[in-house]
Amino acid sequence: MKKNILVITIIVVSFLFSIIATIISLQNYDSNIISKKMKDGYIPVSSKFTKIIRNAKEYVNGIVHLNQIINENKRLKEQLEKLKTDRVTIEEIKSENQKLKELLGLKNQIGEFSDYEVARVVLRSSEAWLSYFIIDKGLKDGIRKNMVVVNNQGLVGNVVDCGANWAKVETLLDPDFSASAMVVRTRDIGVVRGNLNLMGKRLCELRYISKDSKVRQNDVVITSGMGEIFPKGIVIGKIIQIKNDKFELTKNILIKPAVDIENIEYVMVLKKVKGINFSVGVR
Image (cartoon, rainbow, N blue to C red):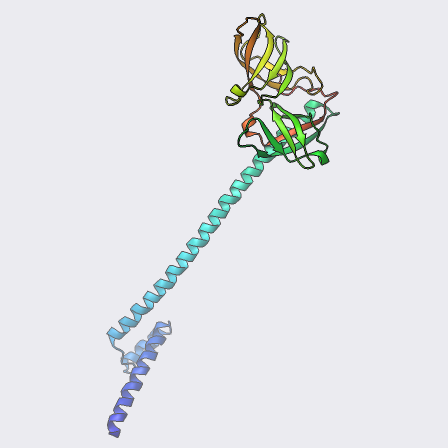
């Protein structure tokens, strides 16, 4: 009985020693020493058992490696998305800076006595997208009703209402808008008005031009300076169509505005117009 216990004890100890020796070998200890001990009979390891242990280790290492790849892939994707976002942000900043530079370039055109406020469009009506918009400057910035609104392309409209931090700008496409105008080449004087039927086409009309006028397509139309609101010389747009009215007394003239009303982002509000030598876009 004691002999059997001794034999079992020896077998168990040998088995445990075998496992310990295998684990040590799998943990990259000196393989030459382990191999020598195995040859000397110190480690009675079964080749099948070793293969199972090796496969298990490779499986675990594979899982660990896969997780590392997944984490690295996620990190690289996050970096790529950030780079894309940063690039978009940089391009947007560059675009805004360019628009502001073009807008501020008007200062040289309107003279040293000009007084203006640069503002950003912050709100548009879904029902009257082309008719008016709201800017981020108001009474506290010196903005008042009837002040002229322009950009580097030409006439945008005028202020029709304002609060402390905002102002409503009526565009030249609005049916209520009107401004005295002049055809640069012929010097004919008329009135530019918005028209509800033309607004959807991004056009306005020039009225009260004589049927005998020599105006023609592509003639430039500017503000005439007559009246109390708009100074002379702000480009309004170009003539694209001319027809005599039904009474054959005047011409019905359609104008394509110089300003892209639909996509305006920044404007300049003129707080002073007397003495301004305005020649935006005049050819």
